[in-house]
Amino acid sequence: MPDRNHDLSERKKLILKAVIDAHIKNGEPVGSKALTKHELISCSSATIRNEMAELENLGYLEQPHTSAGRIPSEAGYRFYVDWLLDRYNLTNAEINELKANLSQKQAELDSIMDTAVKLAAKMTNYTALSVKPKILRITVSRYEIMRIDDYTCMLIMLIGSMVKTKYMHSEAQIPVQAAAQLSSVLNMTATGITASEFNMPLIMKMESAMGEYDYMVTPVVKAICQAMSEFDGSDLKFEGVNRLLSYPEYYDVDRLREILALFERKDDFLDVISNTGGDKNGINILIGRENVVKVMDNSTLIFKSIIQDGVPVGAIGIIGPTRMDYKRVIATVDSLAKGVSAALDRGGPKKIKGSGPGDAER
Image (cartoon, rainbow, N blue to C red; front, top):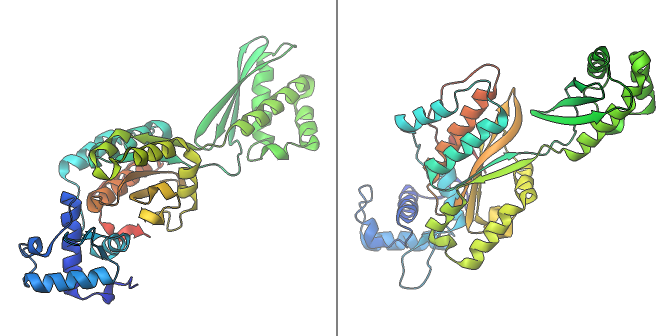
């Protein structure tokens, strides 16, 4: 099956694009008679029918039943996204809304991702999702010990962009200077290592550094390892799930039930986000059966990574029917991802502007 831009004549490309644009707008099969009214198509109805028949033979169009017009196939949508999609520029109102909601330079990742996913659902009228992927090598980059009372303290750990806390109780008193000293020892000896790397030589080194307060080392190491075992950093949130009900593709109760059940299995989506190839700065578009999850064979997933200090820390995306407004969704996801990345980056917010399909990755 052809999949390169030059494999179709310009007239076939124009007709294919017109069919897909019309089907996205109306949700109905598109006939040759309707295309004769297209301002850029000047050929006869008979010529259009012949071209549509050839596009069907090539696998880009499908005919639901004999007397109906044509609808796009998955291959047709893929060609449309890769080669035919016009640039969509966000309106000034949309850009201003993005800026207003994503302007807090020091915003926490959780808070700003929540804002972004709500905006994505609102602006596209599809179901939006935000993802924080699993941290494969869990380490702590910063420790603090906060003394609560004579026998209780709180262990505070910075893991990735997340803060994890543990309360610890001691049978012996915890002097103020002991809590401060333990914070210092942990930051000098225990940052950047995994739970399995807390071996006996390291623990003995920490005990030696603590001197008379060495009794605090064993319980704090136990608390650190327990926190690491509980934490994988992953998170998945959906917004606007009810928006699926607006589209005929999800009117089937069994199909909708399967999709809703899928949303409860976050590992499936986390695996899709983590395993999809392509440039971390590109838009990822999975159409129909390109999704590894079978129940999404009539849906499209579009997402882009969130980058903080050059490192992917999550993703934001949209799920909807394959008959999706690709131009608008791609522009919105791209601008939101860039806006979130800019708000999280130490360099400060960057200018938000509309974008086209040129960044898309298969």
